[in-house]
Length: 260
Image (cartoon, rainbow, N blue to C red; front, side):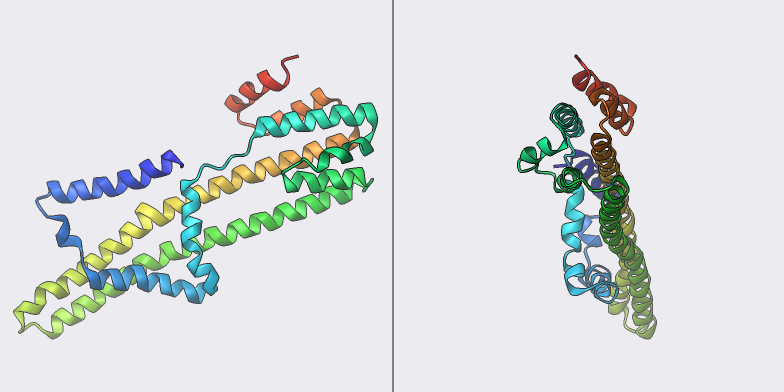
């Protein structure tokens, strides 16, 4: 589980709840079923128009990605590519074929398969970059759906405010209806703001960060595959790949892969 996401989401809602309690108002005052229907479910159903049925339903799985820590294993990738580079220089590119079956990373496996098959370097780069572009497009579509929901929630909150005010003005003579209508008018705006600012916008930002990290790893793998085809020295290959890492991570990985 991603502890930072849990702390962020949990902390935000906890601070809002604590603010409500310390302000002298009970939490139950802010629980309003009509507001939930308008803002939460109303904005979610609007996603069906923006997306497909599977896309709208799957948005909860997309949000769930923020609670998982992606594992990229940069050190393992660099070490494996160095080992393959050394073997290719010693025994030839065809010697890599026997290692491909044990390679779990499909992206790198496809690239190395093209190398073993003797494919031209520019063709390999083009194919791998095309696959990376498609990956980014899929990620962008998911992030776009979250951003759309983040925009719809406050909008439905304002719609709920209008509905509540209309109900209140239409029944001014009925004092018993003023409270419930005012609650809908105000709480829907609150719900929309909470959904967008405490959950959906941060989730979209987190997904974008994860997309950037995965893109960098894929670019590193492309560079590694092409370096193996070019016959680069394993240490030169490692130095190329290490340049893709953050300075702090680079030093830690460098100490391991270039220790000899």
